[in-house]
Image 1 (cartoon, helix red, strand yellow):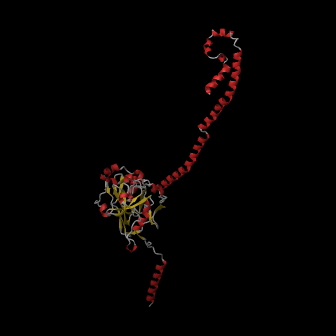
Image 2: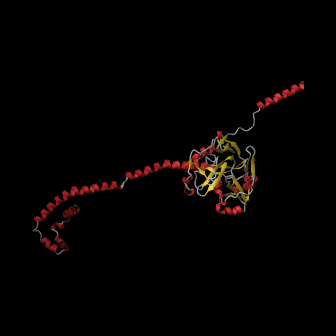
Image 3: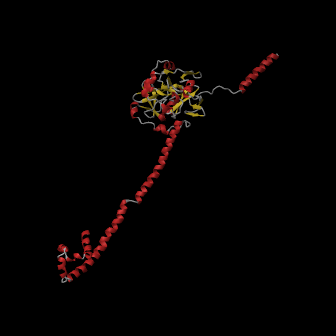
Length: 402
């Protein structure tokens, strides 16, 4: 009997302990449908219906945009090399679904249900690492087994010692050399199996190999769940939203984008002028260098907008104060008044007594005989008073000026 009581007591203690010790099982993950992608990505691009793929998303970006190449960099996590995007919407198209290139419309994103650190293929050549987006419907086994060929110009190669740089896009190799590098490269077939989701990922270059070529230790970044759409990298932790996704919504409802653009109305990629919305609406990942650079650009634009009105005002003021027409008016007014007022009265009044004196003294012309031999006699055609130049000159000036 005592042994039975002891066994019962042990069972009771074990049950009590199981209630008292907190469970270490992961929290239940949320499940969403494609409707989440349709709603969250609509402000940053357009949804179109594309043949053989259904609804695909065209981001509002520059025509030089390249998935896993523009606005982002690589960090090493437990799942392999993970792409950290600088776009606000980067949590979805770079970790779910696949990218496909259309010669007319550029890069299109095809949504899918599986999350991954980055859906890319990796290659290694002497002195280089390279990666390229995987196409829709391509399995991991086929891609790393050599049965899937990516066009040469889709690959991005970088000097291997810069693979861990946050500014990795500064060290991209010119695509004109892709063929040469590809011919000297091999496929990197490292994978990681996510047992919790039953998914296999392409992990990329080995950690030890990267440490050897870079000469620096590679520290793994912890991947944490984020409760809302977005991603933040801080304190060696990458918090990213990665719910389980199903194609259909609850109760069998088919998800549909709220707005679908006709494919014929989409401008060709060569005529596209995107990127404005990217610069204005990129607040995510403030700790990353790329968003910080965009913040500085925004600050510079705001400073220019604040300074431009202050520069225009002082430029206009001196023109108003010292204007050439004002000087001309001030100088002309005294010139116009002087001949109209004084010369009309004074020269004529002075000329009259001078003429009377000349008329009254005609007999005193014996002196003119002496002067007749002189050269001034040539002026005899004009009246005699011309020799008294001081009194007669105003008379000529008045007549000529007026």
